[in-house]
Amino acid sequence: MNKKITAWILLFCFTLAHAYAEGTPKELEEVLTGLQEKMSKVDSISTAFIQEKNLAMFKQKVILKGNIYIQKPAMLAWKVSSPLRYALVISGTDISQWDQDSGRVQSLSLNRNPSFQVAVQQMQNWFSGSYKSMEADYDIKLISQQPIELEFIPKEKAVSANFIQQVNVLFSPDEHYIKQINILEKTGDSTLLEFINPELNREIPTSAWEVKA
Picture (cartoon, rainbow, N blue to C red):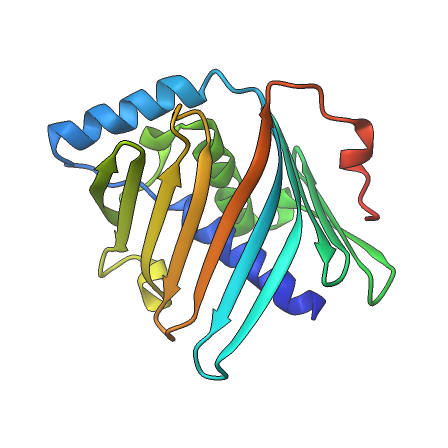
């Protein structure tokens, strides 16, 4: 089960890591610029989340619950509390993970995993609103302005086009953080990630960065 959780987290990270398109219409450019300006004022995020994974082939639904902590410039913790405990902590170039099944902490360096390093860096850019530093792998459509909702379709030559059909991102009314992400995969599986009761620019407790959940 913990391997599946890790895979879904990496899928989520990889998806967000490439979500920007060049040559977009002026209206969309203004929206992206506005989001970047507002989200750049957020130095830390602490939020609960619910991740709902729908497996089309097995007609099965898996729900994960937990918390996410983000501290600029380079700290992120993803902790699953239900149905089992799992923790992934990123601090600079170091990654550590722990899972309830093995009870072991595993560590690796981003410096030895260049592709993962790029994905993590761009994921952090996403949450900070640094959209213009991301690669042009998706066509983006502005679905709604109040609240802002964006639709991302992988371009044909993008690596993500092999397994991602579409991604929809819904932002908070004040446009300071992401409220909901919906990922539709080529297999027909889908993942809905919702952030609940986020706290912005508040001190994150040191316990958030402890790897063992």
